[in-house]
Image (cartoon, rainbow, N blue to C red; front, side):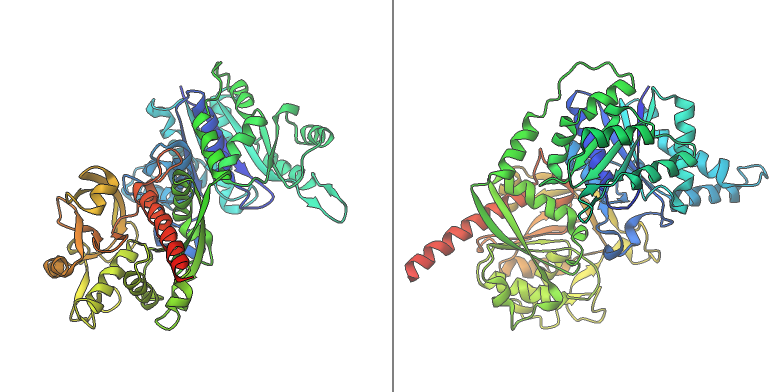
Amino acid sequence: MAKYIFVTGGVTSSLGKGIFAASLAKLLQSRGLTVTIQKFDPYINVDPGTLNPYEHGECYVTEDGAETDLDLGHYERFLNVPTSQANNVTTGRVYQYVINKEREGAYLGKTVQVVPHITDEIKRRMLLLGQSGAFDVVITEIGGTVGDIEAQPYIETVRQIVWEQGHENAIVCHLTLVPYLKSAKELKTKPTQHSVKELQMYGLQPDILVCRTEMPLTTELRNKLALFCNVDKDSVVQASDVDSIYSVPLEMLKEKLDVTVLRKLHIGNNKECDLKKWNEFIDKLRHPSTEVKIGLVGKYIELQDAYKSIYESFIHAGVSNNCKVEVVNIHSEDLDKTNAAELLQGLDGVLVAPGFGSRGIEGKIDAIRYLRENNIPFFGICLGMQMAVIEWGRNVLGFSDAHSVEMAENTTHPVIDLMAEQKQITNKGGTMRLGAYNCDLREGTIAAQIYGKLHISERHRHRYEFNSKYQEQYEKSGMTCSGINPDSGLVEIVEIPSHPFFIGVQFHPELKSTVENPHPIFEAFIGAALKHQKTKSKQSLIAY
């Protein structure tokens, strides 16, 4: 039978429940246990698919096409194991399911209530992965903080599960903040005490207390927290600020978190944590031999979480190239023909990011033209790839109004068009081309060289595509369509063979990059940026 660990949060949001859950899972996995993590979000949206990136950060997409919370990206990057539809549940999805059942008459005329009907449905979904027989441990992160009105049904459900399963099979890790007051020059435990008291009011007692803190916890403070929060002394875990999220598992190992969890769940496991590869990654991350400067041209750069998977993929690819990647954010609305050289010429490579809508589009197109004409490594993802196609159509093929029908319905050269199966769809949520699709690579192309094989599978999230009617004209003029979906004929990858590195992909490679398996295109892009940097240095010496 699977064991269950629930991760709740208190005092404030954004303490890092997702990173903590992923770190704990990594420690248990390194001992040979099979672990999965799921996220339960208290908002009423059915999924994050229709949420603005400024509201929620990036929308992470799984292999099976679920639009999920960005924490699932952390789960996959840490564990190197894919997640699925079952790993992210929202209040909206739960209520939608229960209301549909009520409309069908499934409750036989009973009054449908939060308790037991909503909580029973939450419980069914919380236990689903554990009942599959595929996992030794299921970690469930509860979104929001204890005390939030919308989180109450989840806390009540956790209480019921802990009571039903027993404390040897289900435990609660409560993540709180122990703030440091500079004026008093001391850490304060009162916020954590109040947070635990709030949890206890709902009938739930934390088994492990995880304390985010800027300063080390003294033995005296640990004992005080243990006494007034009613936990064992060795169950007070210090979670200090670290230089990288990838250092958190190592800090939790020092706190013997895995040992405490195994003891509380009665899991007999004498294996030592095998974190050799993880330690090698951290060592390379902390001691790069060189550095590259990469521009990120996007529309949502004010919020780093909007491009979270891209930033993390840069870290993975940087480590594999033994270099530090410094990302320079450039807002596409601030970029045009007059300042493209000023903003881009000092960079070793530029990634043009995905997105939706017309805002900032022309800035992306102007950036791509400058990169293409000046032989600076370019990498375009989804919308970035589409803008590369539009730029080529306008400035190489001479189609002055080449555009995407997403932004210009009446263009006479719709080089980017709405996918055929999307034309009758009116509902926006969960209706894009989502999840993993196959792609065949043309032999001898840059893409085939990067992947080292001719058949790949990548994750998608889009409605618009390269218009195949123009494929022959693009191919003849020098832009190669090097990746094609074998079933639909959709162009997945475009590249310019005559350019040092110019590649655009319709899919989202950042969603498959992990610590153990950096994505090959990101690796190749950073490699090309390093090569471009050396070329610039030689040219500077010659000029001097």
